[in-house]
Length: 262
Ligand code: LP5
Ligand code: MN
Image (cartoon, rainbow, N blue to C red; front, side, top):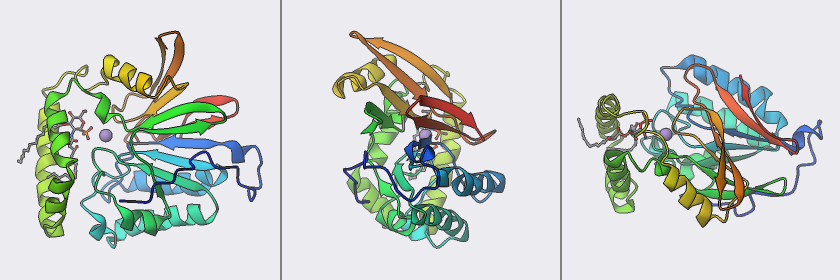
């Protein structure tokens, strides 16, 4: 597992040409990068070089990749392209944080070291300009999706993962392809409501984390801003968009947060 940086709300950088942007935090998720969608990879690498490079920190809230079969796949040419992009961003002084999604939860220390990314757990509580902000991929909140939650418990089990990772890489990829096909089939029979976050699960999480000012998550691919009133607290739930059709990212600075299309 990657090293967990406990100081997510670290002090500002001093090497940026634009002091205004040095106070900027960017949030993305659900890029589903893969070799067969080169236009998304191009858009993402351009985003790293032109947009993220001006920010203080970039947070990736899961599903960076279409799937990740294990860190022994790091030498793959496509993965190397992405790794080089991240390393250049990190070398320019931008802090990069990554959380697992349901498709890339096998990302481990090898990937984080190669990219100079800091791994964060799901959920992660950070301080955004004095505002408590909770980050999550979001799949854990989809509690109505019973078959998915059962599957999730199995594949997030450490013993199961150790055994799976002991298989040869091609065999793992073959199994993942089968699961992907099965998942696409299963999703076509599920209602949109089942695949959305459950309101009670969201409330329970917000209570556990003592009512942060906002929650940012992805996974559902339904970009939006929801206002939740909970026990006298007004909490904003930001849902990040995916990068299939048109990429978008959430920008948070001292003025607040806003969603921006690429
Ligand atoms: O990702 P998304 O949004 O498309 O769908 C998710 C849920 N599906 C998944 C599966 C992933 O998409 C694909 C696999 C990722 C690779 C992980 C790497 C390591 C795992 C190795 C496993 C061998 O997460 C989908 C949710 C949806 O989000 C919305 O929340 O509904 O969940 C499913 O569709 C899962 C099914 O409901 C249950 C799957 C049980 C699998 C049982 C094994 C059957 C084997 C079939 C072989 C032919
Ligand atoms: Mn997801």
